[in-house]
Image (cartoon, rainbow, N blue to C red; front, side, top):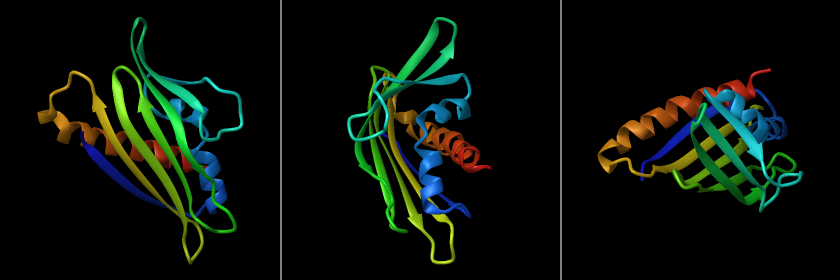
Length: 145
């Protein structure tokens, strides 16, 4: 499975960056042809399940995820959320860690391992590069004011 990592800095405080990056509903708006369906009642916590549905018309695939670690930041300490991908087409995991910076703002560490069923492992580098590009843009947009 390809693993990719994105590191992004923002002037936003840790709590604000956490709030923006864990707003699952807004994630769908950042990924082309995607919408997010929240399947559990708020607030987000371990056990929250949501699906990112991507496609056009009847040609779609679901990236179903469950929050398995939910550790919001507290008093300028890092926050961590881990998602397990439990879909039929997309499997793997994602972690979003948000760390405070001494000079203010936050540093985001986004790590993801993704497998698209039926795709040969020879394409792993392409999948990882596409993931870095797609999610790098999504992070920037989610953090934009």
